[in-house]
Image (cartoon, rainbow, N blue to C red; front, side, top):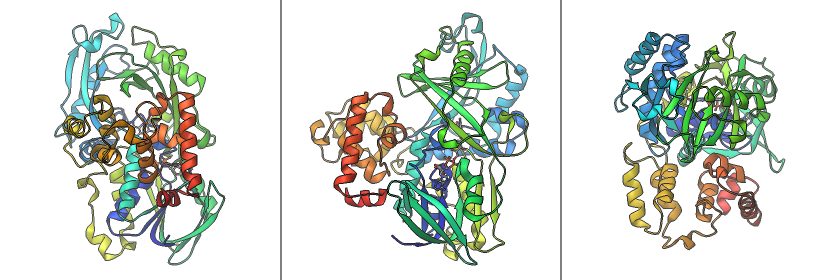
Length: 515
Ligand SMILES: Cc1cc2nc3c(=O)[nH]c(=O)nc-3n(C[C@H](O)[C@H](O)[C@H](O)COP(=O)(O)OP(=O)(O)OC[C@H]3O[C@@H](n4cnc5c(N)ncnc54)[C@H](O)[C@@H]3O)c2cc1C
């Protein structure tokens, strides 16, 4: 492994991996270390909306909303396998904001820019529209329906990392940045493999701190610099058996002025979230608390005819928003915009990322490169912005092309069921065929771990998508954790450990080389 790089990045969330991809695509040599798995922190715990953020208009965040609205269709085109359009139903009932204000907000939402393919807002009569049926009878009055998109957040991160690696970046998972020494023209970063305890040294001309909720702590612990203001705000989600048949989402206003979403999830479930609570503990240990689960159940039960109980919850997850601390009094009012801090006065440059959204990760990466431009070589500056026009791995097909791809896959592999082909296409896009290879039947894919997860797919995830442990496969590269039994999980874990052990691999890079 090379140990001298142009840029070293701490953090394998959406922002770190987005910066790695952008920088590698400009011909720079890039190193990224992630202390856990890719997207193991905030970037797999979002509501998974590629959205402008209707709510942020209330806080006059026009710059952020406009950029996010524009990015919806850009990222959709880059990754049509993991992004798809959604329609949101906003019932008038339960209103905590004047109806004219919401109408005006949605007008702005439709016209701030960037909407070319997504349909605009329309009014609904919930006494007649099927979207009224799951709601309490007295709430079936009027509603607005508008567009945003869905995105598989954790897969977005893995695809950015894969693409960065395809462009020459070194991506190391389960490797923690322990300390960093600054000199006039370089950083010396000491890392530690979290599985073996081994340490290594990496040198880079530029250091990027994309450590998300840890971004403020990383600075003093690595460099001795004072901690910066990051406001940690916890958000939790619950997953319950599917609440209704249609494919639209609900955006529901609560008496406390917060809003929650109810979103169709993984075919058989509904995702409900989120909460907004200041958080003062270790981000690695965040979990949905019983009171948050209670809050989400009762907020949704205010709207749906069938009450939702904590006992209905099949899974919950929680994450910590690493927001820039703008001094807002309420957690829900803290800015969702990002702030980049460049410190290039005391030697080699250090750029820290605070805040950000899944939706705007690509623009954030572009802004990072703009800020670093004076420190980049001529070639990198000449290449300039490129990332929005190039598909992510597997995303090289038209935005409305999922059905055609599923049909093509079934034509090539007639033994594949429609639901299986669809899951593979909506995870891997055109790269699904790399998993299936020349398999003439199901048995050729090796061990069947349950719910359609084959040995061939697991090997692909381990060699191509940096998966090392069972949760990487079941909860981040896929959501098959919702479907596998404990015995099946155990069998998969044993298989993955065996793969690594028999090859003597202790790191992702070694495993990929060995498998
Ligand atoms: C509840 C919730 C809902 C959200 N919903 C949405 C949404 O619907 N749409 C949207 O656009 N955005 C949403 N967001 C925002 C979005 O998820 C975050 O802004 C984004 O994921 C932050 O990414 P990041 O890369 O900065 O941080 P992270 O994903 O947390 O990545 C930082 C990484 O750095 C690693 N790290 C830390 N220290 C070290 C070290 N010393 N060495 C090596 N690695 C280290 C961590 O392990 C971590 O993986 C939501 C956020 C939350 C919490």
